[in-house]
Image (cartoon, rainbow, N blue to C red; front, side, top):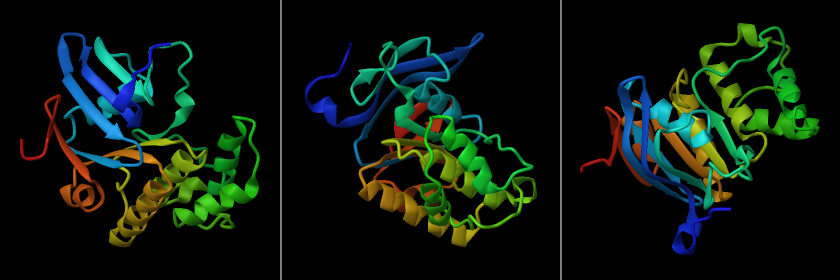
Length: 222
């Protein structure tokens, strides 16, 4: 098992010179990133800058052509690596629109042989949804679907949360509520890596702010 030793053990996420290509186009260009345990890191970037591809590589959904990705010191290429350490929102989550939000989360929660209805209800309260509502997801507003997606990402209490544009579809009140939730999760020791095209959302919440532009990741101001 390949692990990073020494100070790197405090790093929840570490990327070394990661490159990703699709056909002849290079999407990620020698990306380096460190997210410390219990921190919130934000990435600003326009649509198409490479943020979503980066998150998919970190989650193991895409394999980079070059570079290394470590989660809690373990290279994700290792057979013993468990991707269940990460909760994620990437692109538009797929829900069963004929069921309520509570039913959707219950079905997903049971996939890993877990069953705690009270826990699911509490998670829905945390994201500002009513677990007793009979409204089916197909009739949810965009903001409600986004809240449900956040609930899905955090309900298994993973140590690392990858949030691609988590504020999409939320009004100002919703953004405030989710920012408070993320701050609380940080206090609980969670590591959050999030993206947004809105600099204000990132800067108000994140101690490390980076910018992705044309596949290159750099600190804001560099």
